[in-house]
Image 1 (cartoon, rainbow, N blue to C red):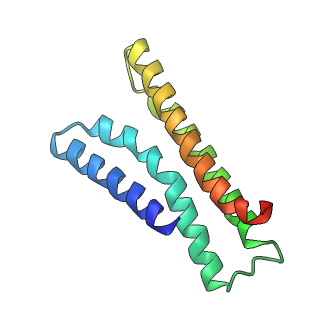
Image 2: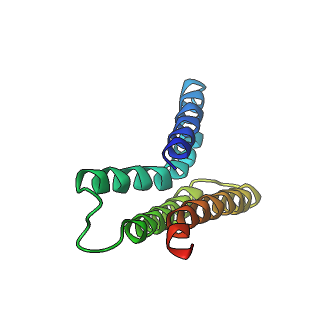
Length: 120
């Protein structure tokens, strides 16, 4: 999932750059939670690589899945925090539903990809 993580991060960075250049700093801030899951995944994969896939005796797939769950939890918390900045109730609800649906699907894909090795 290295390529997928980089692709998601690049799209997120491009969105932030577009919003910042158009002086929509609130929108740029609201897009940031999209990158937390890929960052957590890349970070734990880098740590596992440096530790030669040894993390206190726990299987690397389980450690990776746990990091993805933590990234998902942090993303959800930040979505809820950033949603308080949206004034209109309808827009706030739409932002929460769309972002949480996207994050849950993204998190599920990362977790499934990490754990399918143990299921096969």
